Image (cartoon, rainbow, N blue to C red; front, side, top):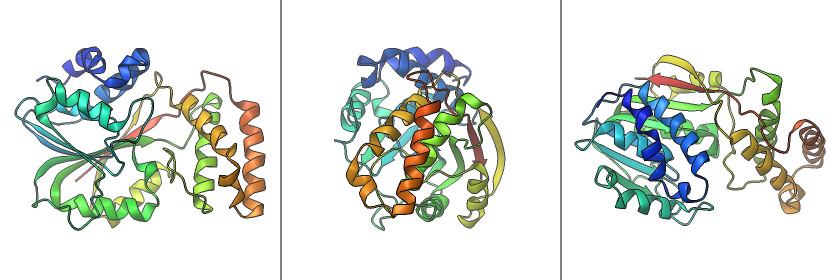
Length: 284
């Protein structure tokens, strides 16, 4: 198919997601974002794709549309099918599996590619994709090891994540919410939020050669329609309201976090906090 058609397909792809039953407008904007990403990549019909950190399948659906009926997407996530709200990963995967894209997708939840029992022959996949999932890794070391592990399996890497460098003042609330969550994790209070190890684009570019990849392109990605700024502000404020998560922090770190939370409350809006931009990196 012509990849420019992916953007036109976004409404039907979004409607096929289980989360669209709860928030159709949000699902549509999230799907459009991923359709624009994949439309800028070079994933030919008939391709095989390994997607790491597939979550509820927002990117999986777009990739499955791009590879066509002769292609295949193996969608992997370390989380169990029961993870997620208001729709679990398992519920979302079941909806996709029952639809027209189902035969093209192989969901594998509760799967860590660092487990020696998980293996594929060399060059099994044309592409490996990580889209807005890398901050969930427990450490940069774990991300490096994962990228090194999949290196023999795929010819090309497509990677996208939020950009820590704000372009305007109205993105500062999203940035601060991300950094606070990262500090809490780095100080030893571990949870299961979306933000565990935030890092910069430059940090990724330093990491790729250590994992055997050679970056050959990096582009900014527009996120104007996305709601993630609001989501991360809310997640951060919920997190610091959980006393047991803060109680285990060293006292100087706890006080630093609390002061930053004061700033976050002062600058964040109840709704409409602009999301940070994102970036896309390609590597061989």
